[in-house]
Each structure stands twice: as structure tokens, then as C-alpha cells.
Amino acid sequence: MRILATILAGLLGLVFGSFLNVCLSRWPEGESVVVPPSHCRACGRTLAWWENIPVASWLALRGRCRTCRAPVSWRYPLVELAVGALWAVQAWRFFDAIHHSGSYTDITLATTAAKALFAWLLVALAALDAEHLWLPDWLTLPGIALGFVLTTFLSPLDRTWWLRPATVQLAAFDSLLAVTFAFVLILAIRWLYWLVRRQEGLGLGDAKLMAMLAAWLGLPAATLALFLGVVLGALAAMGMLFLPRRKNEALKNEVWAAQKLPLGTFLCVGGIVSSLWGQALIHAYLRWAGF
Image (cartoon, rainbow, N blue to C red; front, side):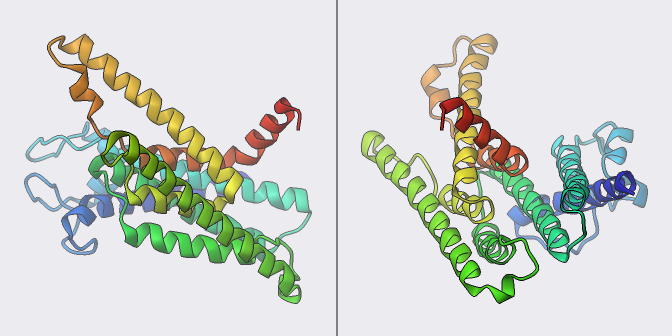
């Protein structure tokens, strides 16, 4: 049962990842995600049904349009695989939760569904920031609100939360405090960068994304996501400084130093890692530090 459910969740994730690709192609252009039907972005030809099969169609067509041979971005299979894999992991963990608790609860199912939605949001924001340096408010702000509501009412993780209003109030206060602190933290870093460089280093979208991570994960796990995101961003920056010297010595390093990096993408990757293994990583660090 577990294996079958995991496979089905992965396949469903591939389908929703395919739909997300449609959104990622059309949102920046202000187009509807419903009409017209899926089509080649280069020649406009409507795709046949078999050209819309997640991952498989891209592989069969070798990443090119069947008609005009225009290249189809690697983003399409990567997004589909990312959502499919993350949803499969959540399904597997759902059965782990049942095994450890000894019984099925609606809260366990609701928590799993919420985590699947959270993963979908993070993949969407990571791709948008990577391609367009854009973290739209209409994804991050509802994401903050939804994370706040879900963690407030699902955090007690028992069947009697409605009989314990004090528990819900405490969870709401903790979540609100985490969201506020995370948002202010990025604003402070942004302000300090401006004082030193006299130019913008972080966008407000990054602050809202950090607040969303705190709403869903809590402050410790969100801080871990920030740390991982900064490390990944630093590695990417070093790579950008190294590669131009290999390709063209005439390119000046200062040109590359001025390039903008999609911090939101790295934060989303850090958020995914933190949502899956955050507690284990935090506990391992605390043991190593002697706390």
C-alpha cells in the first residue's frame, strides 16, 4: 500500500509540475493559464496530447519542438521531476507518521497535503526567481497567510486542539513572532548592505519569502533555510567568478561581480531541505555544539 501510494503521489506530482510549467511560462507575460491550450512558445502550434506527457515527452522530443525545432528549456523536466519527487517523499512520510503513531488521523493527512502544497509553492518561486528575478506578492503573501493558519491549527497535532484554545493561541503567537522576526531580519540585512554599498542588495521579495518560510517551518528551521541559501548563493557566486576566466580572459571580474543572483531560488532550495531534514540537522548541530 505504501509503495503504491508513493508512486501515485509521484505521478500526481508530475502532473501538477506540468501545470506549474504552464504557469511559469505564462505568469510573467500576464497570460491566462487556461487558454489558449498548451502550445509551442516559438511557433505557436498547439501541442498534441502525447507532447504533454510530463518528462517523457521532453525526452522523446529531445528537448525540441516537433515542428520548428526550437529548444525547450530544461526547466520543464526539472520542475516536473522536482514536484513529483517531493510529493512522493511526502506520501512516504505520511505512512511513516501512521506507523509511528499507530493510527491514522485526519490531521496527519491534512499536514501531508499542506506540506505538498508548500513544496509546490517553493518550486514555483524558485523557478520564477531563477528565470526572472521575480518573487510575486500574490504567491508569497497568501503563502504567509496560509502557513500561519495551518501551523496555528495543525501544530498541536492531536484530536483535541479545539478543546484547548490556549494551545492554539500559543501556536498563533509563536508563528506570528517567527514571521515578524524573519521579515525584519532580511530588512536589517538589506539596510546594512545599503549603508555599506549605497545600493540595493536584497529585494523586498526576499524578505517576504523568508517570512513565508518562517510561517510554514518555524523560526529555527527558517533560519537553517537562510543559512543553506546563503551558502548555496556564495558557491554560485564563486562559480560565476571562475567560469568567465576559463571562457574569456578579456571579461573583467567586476562585470561579473555586479551580476544579480536569485537569492530567492537558493532560499527555496534551503526551505525544501529544511522542511525534509531540518529537525534532524538542527538536533545534530546542537549535539555537536554541546547544547
